[in-house]
Structure formats: C-alpha cells, structure tokens
Length: 518
Image 1 (tube, rainbow, N blue to C red):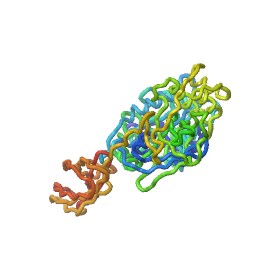
Image 2: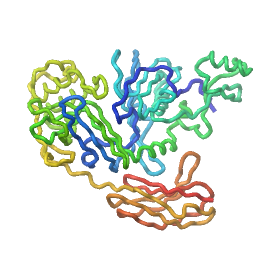
Image 3: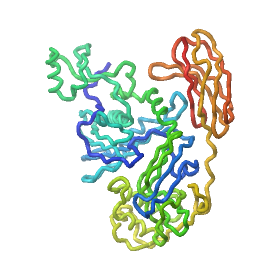
Image 4: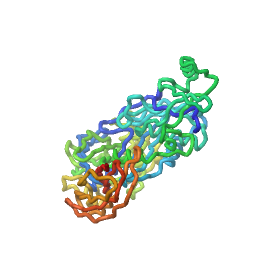
C-alpha cells in the first residue's frame, strides 16, 4: 500500500472571507432541480409582487411536485488569489465534472454533479452563497475545505487548494476537496511508517507540520529520522477518492447512494438572471430576474422566499402593486428580438456584480432601461460596457401576459399559455409482509405499493447490504402499476442471513421495503 506523504484535510485554518446566503438557499444543494419555467409547468411555484420594480421585488411560494429528472449535486465555488499560470475557474469546473460523471444509485436514482465555479476579482467582495477557495501554486500544500463545524449545505465554507500536480493530480485533489463541500468526510488515517510498520498519528497532529510530527514522535519514543508521516485509506476505502487521491480512485457506490437518498425527494426551483416575468396586470411593469435564485421544497414541506431580485423592463408602465401575480416567459436570450439578447447579457453582468444577497446592483436598472425602453444611459455605463452592448437604438418588445386572467403562475410564450407538464407518477408507499424471512428457504412476500398521479412501469429488485452499500441480488421483473394501492405477490430465492430490501423503481421515483433474513 502506498503511503501518501501529503493529503487533503477537511478543515480550513484560514481562508477567504465568505458572504451568507439569502434565506432558504445554500452553497451546496442535493436535490432534483428544475428551471422556473419548468416549475411553472409542474404547477409547483407561485410568484407575486412585493410592491417594487427593482431589487428584492418578488415573493416566491413553492410546493413539492415529482419531477422526472436526476438528483443533482450542485456545488457553488468562487476562487480567489490567482497567480501567473493559475488555472481558471472554468478549467477547474471542467476538470472536476470530468471526474464525476453521472451515476446510478442502488435504487435506480440517477445522480449527476454540477460545479458552478467563478472567479473573484482582486479586492472584490465574496459573492453571496458561494464557497470561497484560495488557490496556491505550492503543489505540496495540503488541501483544505470547510470548517470543523460548518454545514456546506447552508453556510458558505472557506478553504485553500493546491495546484501544480499535473492534470491527473490536480483533478484528483480538486475533486476530493469539492466532495468535502458536498458533505463527504475523509476516509483515511494518519500514520508514521517505519519499514512496513504503520504507527497511528492522532488527528490533532498536523502531519504537514514537520515540527509537530517530530514533537509527537519524540513523545512516543520514536526516532523521526527512521520513517515518514503520511496517510493511508481506511479498510474498504482503498479505491475511494475520499480515502486516497493519489491514483484512479473514484466516488464510491455507497456515497452515490447517500446523495440519491438525500436528494430524490427534494425539489429545487431555480431562477436565473434573464428570466422574464410577465405581470398579470397589463398596466403594470413586467420584470426580469437579476440574480440567481433557488428554493428547495420536499413532500409536505412547502417553501416561501421573500423574495427574488428582479428589475423593471417596462419603464412607462405602473410600478407593480403588492400581491400582483406573475407568469414565466423564460430567458430573455430565448426570445427572437436582438434587444433581448443584449438584455440577457446586462442582467447576467448585474448578477455577477451584485454587492450582497437580495441587493440591487448599482446602475443595473439604468442599464436595463437603456435596452428595454431605449433611454439615455446614465448610471449603468460600467455594466453596459462589461456586457458588450453596442450603443444603438433598441426596439425591445413589451409583452402582454396571455395568462392574465388566471390566478395561477404558469409558463407562457409571448402569444399563449404553454401546456402543463404531464402527470408524473410517484411511488409514495411501499411495504412488504412478512419482513422477517427464514434463511435457506424460498419465501413468498406480499408487496403493497401506492402510486400517485398516473400509471407507471415499475421494476422490482432484491438487494443485499454489503458493508455500507447495497448490491443487487436478483431482478424481480417489471409490472405496469395503476394509481392507488396495488398488491403484488413476489417469490424470493433462498437467502443466507443478513439485511436485504425490496426496491421498487419507477420512472421518476423509487421506494424501499426492508427485509431481514435469519
């Protein structure tokens, strides 16, 4: 077994400053994610005015709905401290995502990874709700990610990452550190190796600090000159990137299962800069989203966010009154008019320059009106220039809401209401009788499944626990299941003692019924 002389650490001693998240948001999310338009098609979101035309202007209410999309582990990271030859945020993002391809958990849930990386300009404030990472050119530096008691799902974490280990080495260490920001822990131990003997080193000793290791060795009567300090994977984690990054180690199936379990019954609704919101009152202003927004909900736990940053795109209409509803047109860039492409750019730049969470970006509204209403540019010249918008006459459209008569938020086009998403079948219950089986004998099990919304083609598996993971023992076939409760009879092959489970896997959901063989 190779002894790693330097390895990643889950604790950051001192890293870049961070900025908190808006209520209900997090720098790492593990959930099924849908756009604002898709959420409106699902009937999962309601948008109302807070009585303003820019800044924190829109309130969002959301209800969980099943969605036929993978679980996404999204990690938002902002990098600082660039140096000559330093990798760009885009290069780091691409490298990590290459190392984390879409996978499938033991219950059939698809899991994918999305690293959202950006660079923090020198002297700039940290972006709200982004983990902050300092890059160093010291390739021997131990990577750091997060604080001892920090929760990366709710609080931006700080750390420092090394570079210069080559494409493979950098990719492995960056992936390891990113997975810390997704909540995974190290799966290695510190040791002092003399010949073939490994002597455990307490976690309180920083093995990257020679003086600390020498002092520890002296206290134990160990000759420091006879060996080396390093790390080695815990038993069973030899091929785990959280146990050893110095090879081709990957994310384990057990961790993939953890992510699936966390995220499959969570729905994150995300709005992006440039999304157009049409007012149900034709005399009042339409708005455009001006900062990233997300709200996560789960079954029985609806969510409310007060509110979403947006800007007026109809200068000559009335300011929206409190309580007025909105519908979702979708991204400005998706509209055919050239002016809307430029509007998209301006909104994206405004979002990147947002000073704090839920705050209006200085000059943003002025730059937007320059395009939406062909006004004179005054305060927004910097945003306008950064967006690369030409100084010309614009003829932007001013939309009439085709869903104005409905109180519900829907996805719309400039001319009509888009069809709602088709019903998504969802397995809400699964139980088995009996749950305790005799070892060495075939067993007949009655399985009760409750399906919501629509018919589904459901496959069934028998799985056995193996360590911290689950492996398939037998495919039990596929059945067409109607909405409501259905009772099925399954015959299970003889099994040795242990923990097993029956798994029902539908188009967009899965459910588990535990079994025990003794």
